[in-house]
Amino acid sequence: MFSMPYAILVQNKTKIPCYIRLMKILIIEDEADLAQSIAAYLADENYICEFAVNYSEALQKIETYRYDCILLDLMIPGGSGWSILKELRAQQEQNGIIIISARNSIDDKVTGLQTGADDYLAKPFHLPELAARIYSVIRRKQFATTNIIEQNEIKIDLLAKQVTIHEQEVVLTKKEFSLLLYFVSNKNKVISKSAIAEQLSGDIADMFDNYDFIYTHIKNLKRKLLDAGYGNYLKTIYGTGYKWVV
Amino acid sequence: MKKLLNFSLKRFIVYASVVLAISIPVYYFFLNKLWQYELAEHDVILTDKAVREDSFLIIGTVTLLTVIFFFLLMGGLLLLNRSISRRLWQPFYDSLSRIKDFDLNKQNTVSFGETNIVEFAELNKHLHKLISGSVAAYKQQKEFADNASHELQTPLAIVQSKLDLLLQSQSLTDEQYNIIEDAGRALTRVGRINKNLLLLARIDNSQYMDTERVDLSTLLDNTISAFREFAATKQIIIKSDIAKDIEISSNRGLLDILVNNLLNNAIRHSAPDSMIEVTLSGKTLVFSNAGDEPLQYEQLFKRFSSASSQTPGTGLGLALVKQIADRYNWQVNYTFADNHHIFSLTL
Image 1 (cartoon, rainbow over the protein chains, first blue to last red):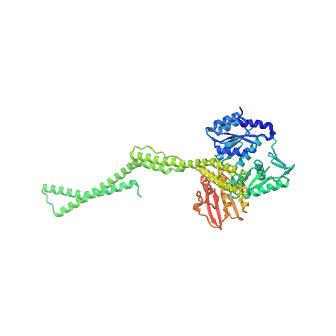
Image 2 (image 1 turned 60 degrees about the horizontal axis):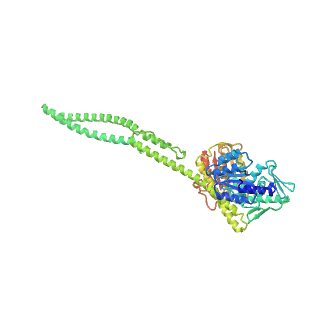
Image 3 (image 1 turned 30 degrees about the vertical axis):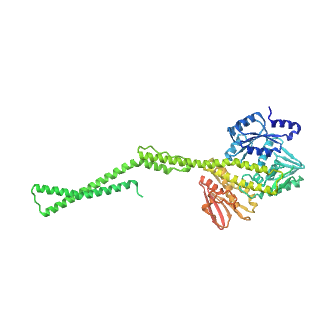
């Protein structure tokens, strides 16, 4: 009765330690191209993606299986994304819900978050941005009390927004902290300058074509981490791209 | 231009006066004949002098009577014409005043009153058809802008995601990477234009209607500190002089966009190593930055008027500013003085 990916999940669970267990994600999106891109990007991480292309399929899947995170397009054939959102919230599961919508309206965003979505991402978006949102939504939902990311020598306390390297605290600015999280949640991925610019400044970066400001933040972050004795994981690639190599 | 009522009346008067003027010699002729006949019947012979006197008497009386009747006729005609016309043309004036009040932007259709005159009923019918046609076309055009930019979001998202995926390929050369970056940058610009078009269409369609009291002073302070960093990459200093506690009622999101666009505009079009001044005092908000020559005022606030490959903007920023200001009846102005571009907003 289990679908294939779920079976894999169960198998894997026995083999690998549970703290890196595979995360299951349901992509409710009728554009196959977009859904597949998302799945392909997330595949190398500990994510397994399933798809639902219409209302009834989405409803059937959320009733049958449990997911760690659900990406929900509000406009799907056969019904309204809103009622799926309500259904999901009625289930009282600890799954994260991220709305990915072509409707970039302030009203939708507010209503979405009030109805119980954990995040709202307007199309078009950068895949690294989506990955970072998924990463933090899952953390927030499932590790509500002790939410600490460890990666080699670094420890990031998401609740206290504290970073320690070799038990020593590193003081980061708000932007450097979010940049660090962005890299950590997109490890081993090539991230373009424009994706970073968008992440760093949201709507404002939208207006600028000059991305020089991101160098300062990256340079400072890199220096602070190196000074604290952290390995040089942040690589510049192809001249203007970045990659967090772990 | 003549009024319709006077137009017909004047012809009546001219015609009546011509007829009455002609009637004077005709009356005279026949009265004279009758008089002569009666005199001959009763064998009365008058002296030449008496004949002349009688003629004058007849002419005088006929003229006087004609003039009196002329005025009677005119007075009556005038009154009758006025009251008939008023009743007759009432539906026309009704329709006229309704059309006068019609505003395509307000999206309300015009309904014409009932009339039992065939011509006016027909006129109203066709006017109604014409107006509802325009309203429908206008609405359709606005919805089209909304739907079109909306439908574009998903394909844009697909292209964006494919580019992000392509970046993950193992064996990219620097050159290939740069091609992807360039494509990505163009795509970002398309996305931005699309977003702004959508926003314009939404404002057109009277969305974002909810207003609240917004503390403009705080909003400006926050915006300026958010933009400082971007300005710093061009060594531009933002100097601000913001009066405290100035509140206005508007939609917060729209006000944000307005302020962002004006400030972004100033930064984008400033030379490196220059200064931007932002002043808020009372009901006036002023952005000023150095510039070499005045901009073309007529073109400034039009959509896509400034878009070119040299300026990487969307060409919609100032159009949005204008649109938002118009919604709240704020005045946006541009002047050029002392080698400074000055954009001012009067609330």
